[in-house]
Length: 261
Image 1 (cartoon, rainbow, N blue to C red):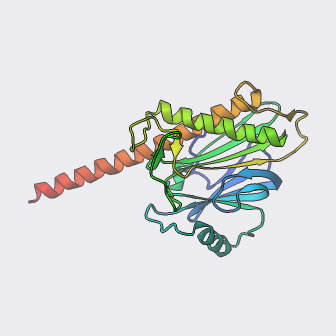
Image 2 (tube, rainbow, N blue to C red):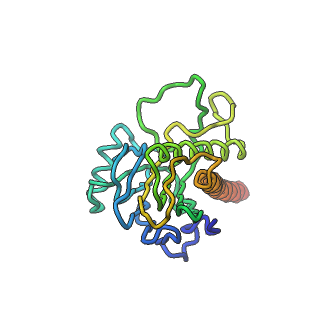
Image 3 (cartoon, helix red, strand yellow):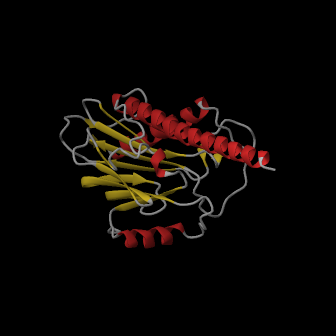
């Protein structure tokens, strides 16, 4: 597993991350968004707010929006933003996040039968537990866990669905171990109200194997679970550490103001 977890957190680091396990795959931190580009068109399966579904993907964008973003029409807003950035709309999946993008966690692993790459931006402000009654939201909300998973290798369509299931289980496990709870009921959260995932698979024959399963008992699923679990944990902890620093600085500033009175 790659040890460089938050590659954009240090401002002195390069703003382009080049994958070691999928040759030509790049993730770039740009103004207001992360741009993931694939060297060749990939098979996609995603719940992205823009360009989701079973599609062919050339790129994915994770856009930063403020927590007070007016989110009545995120599809329209994303399309306008993609045009402004100059990206072709075809083959693009678009995500939105209120997580400052320097907290993105990136991990990858070569299992010998596939190259697996993972990027997560995570916040828990809208933490929620699946399986309980809760108020229904009519509009998209940006406080979310966004997961981009890219696999250089061959997977059947069923294995792609299985990969998303395993990634979701790993995300829920990370939240449980971090003690994240649903503020509506105090129960352990399984995600947030607007989590999204983008899975891209190269279909490359660079590896001999064709994966028909991606559950936790397989090499592929085991690696997906480890990467997602670690990336969700790292991104959330990075955000939480920054919030503690901000609150500490605010408290010191308040103390200074009080001493001047």
